[in-house]
Image (cartoon, one colour):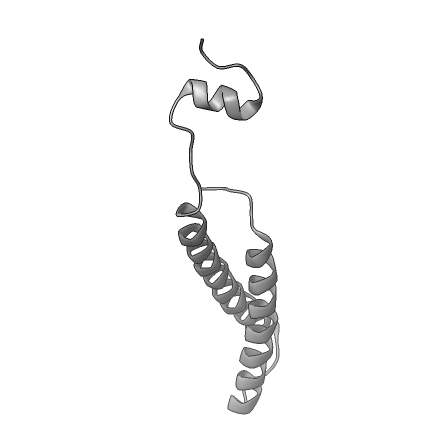
Amino acid sequence: MFEMLSMWNLVISTIVFFLAAWYIHRYLDEQGIPKGPTRGILVLVVASLLSWGAGYFVDRVEEKNTATAVVMPTGVSQLLKDAGGQGSP
């Protein structure tokens, strides 16, 4: 579940977070909802969820692209040859 984050995940989710927070904040201003801690927490939670979703989507797209490009060695001898060893005689 917890894997190393890709650089694209970090970049895209950060951009989505700030855009979502700005848009939600602006929308709530237009609706006349008064500023306060509840509104701030609402903006934080919704922007975080959207950011997490965007990061998840980026990881899934990246997984599909890298899954087809990875070629694994077929045997131990091939693995040893690729690593610089002699392999089996």
